[in-house]
Length: 120
Image (cartoon, rainbow, N blue to C red; front, top):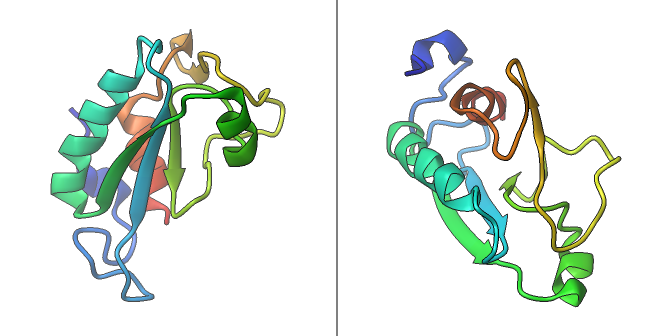
């Protein structure tokens, strides 16, 4: 379990962001992805602790993937931005991999999620 105090910056607990607005987190996924549910569960837990708005959005077609610049499933957007994107990921209906301390895996770790959410 990640202790949120390890990532405290300013008023990260709750809606006390500098701009006064709630952070919006969106999970983009496609139905055949085996990793989106794990990521969504992690985000649900974190949303209760960090009090951000969370939604999930299924990407059904290649046209939708192009329009959304969908870089594979699961994709986490924080206020519309993909904090994990390097620019090298292809756009399309595919599984995405994340670089972790344990190597490449199909979903970001809880620590990676907390890191990007706390740095907003």
